[in-house]
Image (tube, rainbow, N blue to C red; front, top):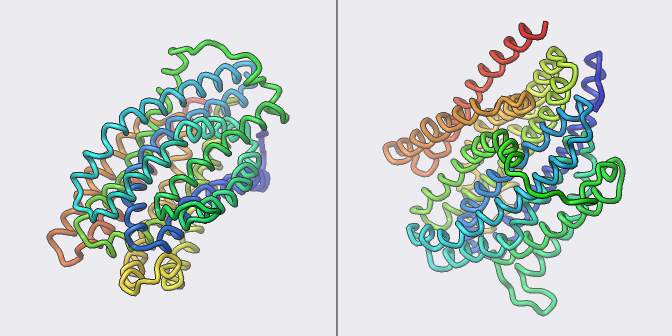
Length: 452
């Protein structure tokens, strides 16, 4: 990261940060994408089982990753303030915290998997796949959390291409592991959808090993000597990081878990409906990696500008640059969903009923990805300002008190049926985007008055 003066310089630097993040995020989600596609080829029950398992695992996974994402704005602001000597201690405590969170989630999950699945009206094969998909992917949970902490540190320094390299190495391995464990190659049994969980866990471990080697041996990371001397855990530092990370994590959790809640509510429908919903949400989420990447790039750029010389105007320019980029991407993504719905649906299943239902779900996805493309960059901007508490409450109200109840009413009291939940998603995401935009404008005016 470095200061910029002209809009052209800002666009250039923003793209230098954004493109590797985008490739990284798309590649990371490609793991889930291939999990879903390859599980679907094993059968509708395997696809539905992975859908249920993912709906329980992903919100928790992303919520914890959101907490650990606090490392990016912290490191970005320390870098902007030229306080490099504080970074090693901060990163080490973040690693300890990520391990502690992983242990807590594992213990809680061990007690809740069976009771939650028992409450759902699932076919026996779907329940079996969902349970053991969660168990197997959970074996890589702690490595996954530590890797994401190190990735946030790497990205916070502005070296987003390093994260890109790691994921581009591990993605082909994930696909290979899927092929081996889902379909039973090299003399192993065919695990079906459960094999996708095994493949993901192995990939998480590889990601962690690669990130440790890079941070320890390659400049500029090795200059911080993260792994040279380990200091004792500091609960004070944990709480300092949690004070920023928990609102981020819960904001992400509320957004991601509303999709999971919809999947769980759809469990009362038949297996083909669940499978079609999972296929459509999987591809729509794949497209969401673009605005999410813009948000992560904005967190770094805005955090750097406000952390050093309090360049509030420059931070504002970056925020609107990101929002504009998100809106442009939304038009492109919407066109893809509209024009290639049949081709997308056939990626996931050969079942004619699943294909037809998937295409209907994809039509609704066109509209809620517009709200995502506008709202996600704003969230990234606010995280760069370390303004995270208000976004937590806005997310809670928008997604859970507006979006989900609206979807339930539309699904149960209109002829929309399962599609009513997706219309509720559109309402909730739109409400969140509008309120977040108002918060961003208020904060920017406040900071300009303070530092001008």
